[in-house]
Length: 114
Length: 108
Image (cartoon, each protein chain N blue to C red):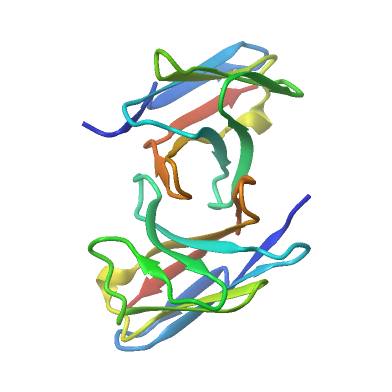
C-alpha cells in the first residue's frame, strides 16, 4: 500500500531554534500534501494544504512566516518551524494523496521545545 | 458545537466483544473517513466511504447520508485493536474536519 515517510519522528531543541520536518511519499506521486498539528488529547487540526510547485494554503490562525512549507516535488514536502518556542511543542503529522483518493498519513513528528 | 462528534469518547471492552463507535456530522460531505491512531501517534486510514457499507476483515463501516451518521464496528475485538479511532468528514474540497476521537481499550 501507499507509504508516507515522515522524518524526524522526535525532536527536542532549544527555544529559538528552527526545525525542519520532511514528509515523503515513497511509492506514489502525491498531488497534494497536508500538514496537521495535534495537541495532547485533542483532534488533528489542519495547518496548511500544499500542492507541488505552488504556495501552500494556510488555515486561519496559522502564521505562514512561522510555519514555512516547501513542496518542491511530487514526493517531498517540508515544514519548517522557525524560531520555535515552547508553545510550538506539539505533534506534527503530514499526509499525502493522489486526487480523489484517501489521504495516507506519516507517523508524525513529536516536537518538544525547551 | 463541533461539526463532527463522536461517541463514546472512551470505551473499554473485553476481548471478543462487538464494538460500535458512532460519528455524527453537521456539514455536507463528499466522503466520510475512519482513521486509526496508535499510541505512538501514527495514523492509518481504515475507510473512506460516501454511501452504504464497507467491510475490511473484522472492521465494518456504515454511513447514513440522510441522518448524517456513520458507525464503525469491530467484530471479535482483540487487544491489538486498542487505539484511538477518529472520524473525519471531507467537504467538497480536500479538507478534513476531524472528530475528537474514541479511545478504545480492549482487555484480554
